[in-house]
Length: 315
Image (cartoon, rainbow, N blue to C red; front, top):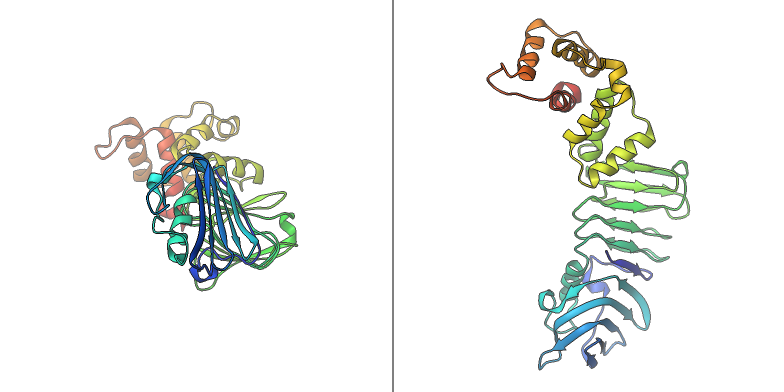
């Protein structure tokens, strides 16, 4: 996992913000290289076993860090990398190749990274992986890219206001605090000092919330829901969470320690869908549970999960 620190007013998404010139000098050794252009910008890469072709382009070896400076000012510093020179996207030279540099950043930041912005108005992007992005002060645009990404804020949740865009379902505005004023795109979580808020209500967070409410017939507590979301983000399946809920003391207090199939189905209708089922509905699900229904055979945990994810429960 890499850690990326950005300088002020840096725009990952706009190649013209790099404003690079032609290469005027280059040093290359087995432990890294530095390239300087005609505008005084530089790129320094540190690594191991690095080799170069006749044009001076890096072709093999592992890069562990990169530092970019524009006009002598730090704009990007990435550490904790492990990038193979044989696989990089940008192999046509540094100077005058802003679009190539953007492609290179996308490749280098394709995994789960920690990205820390500066004090200015930056445009930050996580690209691939499950990224943690802290914009810092200034009005930042944070694009999480692919994966389950988290925007991090220094203050408590009560200090901020989060509003969804009226034109896009995956865009939010965060205001307040000392580091608000940001636009979030493709960001699934907001982590405040005292709480984590899920934005992808149609994704993992929504599934965890519905299952929690379905299993226990109550609004989830923040700590418990957050724990389940974190577990699912880490790879725990919804079915496994359903089984864990069924094994819990709270579930057994609502449904009994060993309810009959008919009792379980009736209680699921009452606690999840909040209505009394008709007899043919009970018969259908009992058949699912005992294997006599030719269309399907499911465990109790699968039935609970399907009740939770049903169109009726989500209506």
